[in-house]
Each structure stands twice: as structure tokens, then as C-alpha cells.
Length: 88
Image (tube, rainbow, N blue to C red; front, side, top):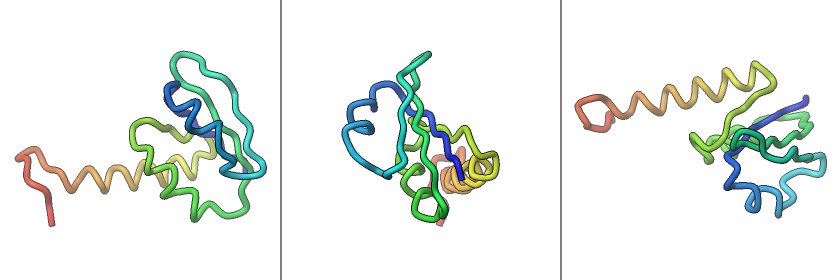
């Protein structure tokens, strides 16, 4: 499936200098973000990879992957409560 991810502009060199996947394509930065397009049959390994970029990456397509990433980040945020103590 087609996956589109936006990354913060400052990551351009780091992301574009490597071959992450044979189908990768990049669109130069606009409004401080650039996009990466890849076509993957299986997203299993992609999910932790994009999560590693934290707030510096945004999945734009597909909506199902965007929802998965949002769910993972929401769950991770629950580990940090307003009282400042990490949940165990």
C-alpha cells in the first residue's frame, strides 16, 4: 500500500541520504515539512521506524496507518501523567 509520511525539514539530509526502501520517493520541503512516499506490502516493520521519529514525523496516508500511529502515541503518552510520575 502507498504510505506518505511528512518529516520536519531539518531531517532532510538524514532521511534522503539513505535507502530505507527501494520504492522511496521524496518531495522537497513545504511549510517546514517534506514528504516521503513508499509502497509497502507489510507495514509491521514500518510502524516502529516511524514512531522513532516522534513528533518530527506525521503519517499522512493511509488513514488506517495514521490511526495506528496515533493510537500508539496516545498509549505512550498515558505513561506520563500530569503529576509528573511515569506509570508502571
